[in-house]
Length: 425
Image 1 (tube, one colour):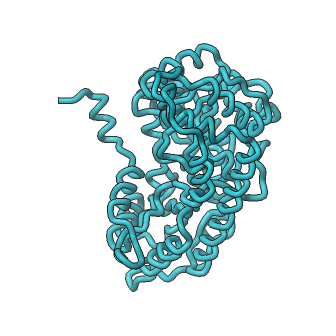
Image 2 (tube, rainbow, N blue to C red):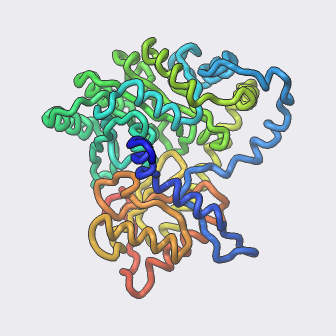
Image 3 (cartoon, rainbow, N blue to C red):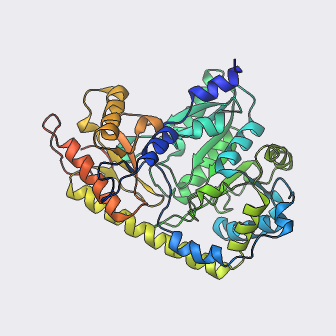
């Protein structure tokens, strides 16, 4: 017998996690396992280890102090060094005292949602959105996630109007909304939100008197022509800084998801105190914090590393889209992140999200390629899939070849040219 909360968490296990572990159990190898799975469903950056290995190996060895308890919301030195990094990113000085270090960005999202919301209260999220938001924001807090559907006609770009409509509709239904949450840059679309759009969104959030949660875990993973703007940047957020809460972590920008270290920045003293209390249940080990503090100790190395990472992301993205265009697979152009949003709508073996899930399972079981269906990201319409490309280039090429071969089977329509703006022709 388990509690109702435990039963709900078990029922809401993200498809992302299930597919990841199945694919990783039998990975493709051209020589030893040519019929293995190709995992392009997990947003891990596997292009950086050669840049990290030497730096990590050169760090000071563990000492007795490393084995002791540390402040559960983060050591002073780690929070100070993260504050230095993110102050430049956000274009505003961040106080280390306003940072809470916690086990992963998931832990940070769970903490801020639990602090802001009572069970049954709502968080509005522009959709499609990161598929684990439902669990990260609502799993333990009991918050209800309300999608604000974006339009496929312009590639699902963020608009303040879509969020405003969702907030007004929630109010008309008598739902109490406590916050708006978004990923910036966006996941799964890879959009770098323009400053004017963020400014308009913040005006909407302020008008509705709700908080903003900005998941900026891909802040340094921008490879397109538009620069990243943080929701904490005073240029777009002159009036709502205390009600804006930024989440970041080492999983994406530094390619270290296994170290499970996230950061929450909040200027609200009550929210900060409550989030520190939540960190009691999900602290980061002292050894991990010491490692990450050492990694950030040399700002010149950090700048060089992040710059090299962006160049590699750009090359990986360009390699993927060249393959997609060669095989006639439509996609929405991206500017950041590790994934591309594919439009496989014309190959659905039927209509609706049931047909989308069927195609997903066919690709997984028959083609042995793990990509994720749009339904897992609360896509407003079926037929979209997220493909992550930050693995070795030959693996990406083999995955696209298998996808194209499956889509081009006699029972499926022939591929047609892509739509350059991400919409369906």
